[in-house]
Length: 510
Image (cartoon, rainbow, N blue to C red; front, side, top):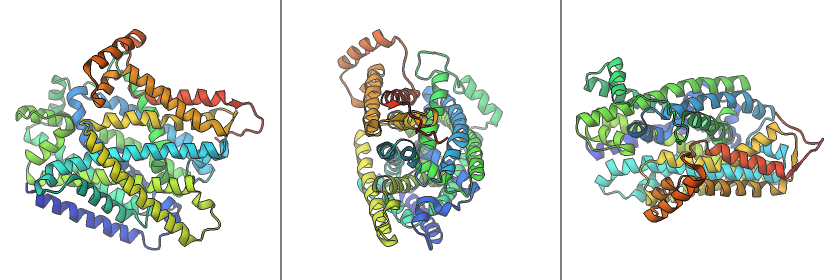
């Protein structure tokens, strides 16, 4: 299909978003931007969060993983399911009880200002890396399949898309995003369902025949029983559970939408509804991945990984499917970027600058600072996307989950120490404990998974083999997987214990 026509649909879609943004941002203020005036509809938040959680990474990368890992990713999804219940019934009651705008204010109440700013800092680093990696993936697909043919540079593409996101989040913030995410999730799920149905019909398969064929090809295998493997079922489930706790429950972007709901009961209904739908949607993405590999085999297409879905949808399916794919892909891109940009602005303004505590600033001054921070983060996003382009990794989902293990680990340790323990820490040393935990776990993981790091960093074969032999002598065949986050959190917890003491004045706010 003509790249010009596809681009025209992208532009029209963006104009619809701008219209929604204009309508929802009327009479908005700083509270609208940060927490939607605590008046968001829980059903809209639940539905919109599906798009935020899945993002372009799920849309493109998860189907691509079926070729090498079968349905193994569903192990992680089971962990997500368990983790969301913990978020709903442990963390959400805490946030509502303290009436928080920023969830990291809990750390100030429990430990002190250094812990508070440390938690916010790790969130800012985590979300910046994760959001820009997701953005890069989708922008790169648009670039390769549409914009290269129109001789538009990657840098210009990234700039224009970020400008679009900036325009429709500039005023309304969370108040706007709750509605735009709902719209975008609708289009994303439409793209998923239409592609599944079309390919099944094209190959003349019923659902039962599809599952039977995928089973014959060994694509439906879920559980890995090799205890030494990084994909061992227990590691994947427990890792997925703590990834959810970290990347949702301890993440200002995700919680910002939840605490914008009127009350705790509605917020919990939002979380559980969203969780159940998310499990089904992830299964559909894995089913789509299996169908795509069957389609590629039938048509002798030598393509796999992140390139599989875009190649099939844009080059080998009818024009209307190509349009639906592009709209679905764009719909997967925006929720992960607009929410991140808004949440990062909120966290920096509230947690780092202390905007809500500045009684010497009037509302206009605060708004000016907030808009300046918003634009600054958009520039940071642009530079990070260019960096990911230079790295040019073909399986970005592994990068994102690996980074989460390092950056969300300290948050996990800080919050769990505060909730579980009654001890009082030396607040001034909290940031050093968190940094040391990250450095130590990075060194351990590098040593244990040298093959993965060697591939990413393009190390010499001799160097990889030398480190591998030393690693095998220490770890044997055992490989660290997605449970890396847990080890990092435990190291942080241990470090906090070492700088703590018993105190009758310490209060656990749980």
